[in-house]
Image 1: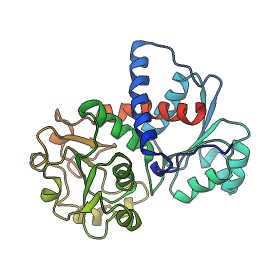
Image 2: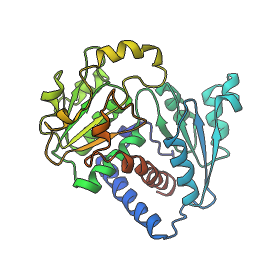
Image 3: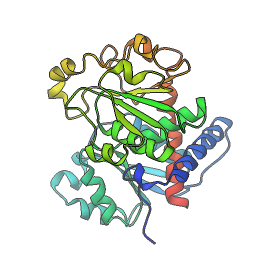
Image 4: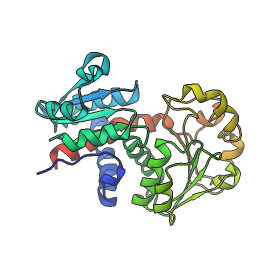
Length: 301
């Protein structure tokens, strides 16, 4: 039987997405209560990192340990990937030695090639196109604090990047309204926008876009690999900082999310990220629990 992969959230059904959120919260409780849950005993995860990481690496490594398994860190500098071994060959070799592969990379094509040629599950830990693991954690965080997000209004402020693309996928799966506000030239994938017109809209004015939102989310203005564009991006995104004034236009019980790391004073003010309705630290922690639920789902189903 062909393995299940998580190349993007589109690899999940709506029911599976909610199942993962529910299970992540259960595993979170089990960890806090000291309940053993070594469901992946003797299983191993290969982790390919072409991009540096704090949250992705630590959450997957700690998660595999807590589930009774182990993880192996691979970077281009200390593997044959750095010497030009084809992605397909790497997938064929690794999948004969490990039980799952996670990759944090630039090109979505790298994820797709790994999945195509791997005989074990492949997880997209981040690509320039999608960041599905972060959305599992984001939605878990919202569900834990406010319940089901179905029918609620969510506002994405800033770059139409991998996070924004994944929020579009989440809106389709969990049936919420997503309003995106970004400068011209920084829109998310056009195909995603066109295919989800019933749930997703683009509003240029941040104050209008955030009005009544139950959740406000943002990300850095320049992602990894875009550092050379930072000066221009600061100018283009100057009106898209999430401030206390902007949050005041959202719903009275609105939550603020940021996948981190954050640049206070750029995409978000210090007052917002440190406020009571900011749940970014729990959001970061939930990467651990959501990914444990995902690993269990892919390896034990």
